[in-house]
Image (cartoon, rainbow, N blue to C red; front, side, top):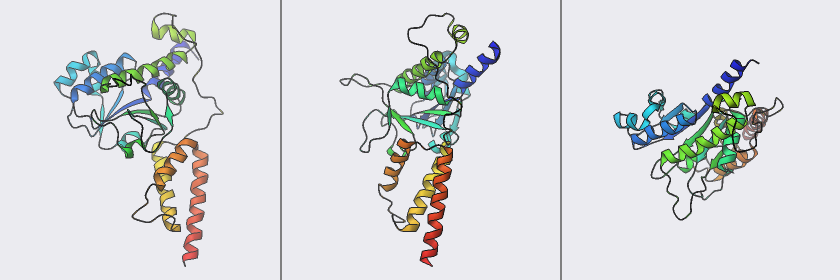
Length: 274
C-alpha cells in the first residue's frame, strides 16, 4: 500500500470515532468539546436531544473547530445516535448499583482504535449535572471512568471529552508504522512503546448496536412467551441479562445462533400452549 493510501486509511479510522453528547444544556460546552475533539484529530460529533442548540457562544468557544460544530449531527435519542456502531463506551462519573464491564481510559482508547477499522465506534458523554441515565448506560458495551482526584473529581464536559479523545489519539499514533507516525506528528519522538492496535482477520466481527437491541427485544419476547417474566413487569431480569451478554460480548455469528435458539423456544412454547 502506498504512503498516500496508508495516510487516508489512518484518517478514515479516526473518522469512525463518534463523540456523542447527550442532552447537553449549555451550548458553550458543545463548542469547547468540538475544540477538544479537533485538537486530537476527531471530527464526528453527534448531539442527542440538546436543550440548547449551538449558537454564537458555542462557535466562539469552538475557536478553530467551528467546522466540527457546524457538521454536528442532531438526533432525538441515544439509540438513534449509536444504531450503526459496533462498539459503544459510556462515560460514568460514579459507581452504579448494578456493576457493568469497565475500562480504564488507556484501555478505552486502545479498544476504540482496535475496532474502528471494522465499524463506527462511539464515546458517549452525559448531561453536565447528572451524566447518563441507567437506561442509557445499559445501551453501552463498556463504561469508562476517568480516575480523577477523589477529593475533587469535578471534570466539566469538555475536559472529559479532551481526556478521552487524547487516549484515542495516543492509541491511534501507537498503531501507526514509523512513516505514518512522522507525517501525523511532525517528528519521530514519542514517549511510549509503539504497538499495533489493528484487528487481525481472525478477530470476531461484533454486531452493531441496532442488531444487539433487536436481540435483546427478541430475548425479552421469548421470556414473556414462556412466562419467565411478566408482560408488564420484567423487573431486573433484562438488565442483568444485558450485563451478562455485554460481559460475554457475543459476535455476529453467536448472536444469530442465539436468535435461532430463541425462535425455536418460541415455537415450542406456542405449540405447548395450544
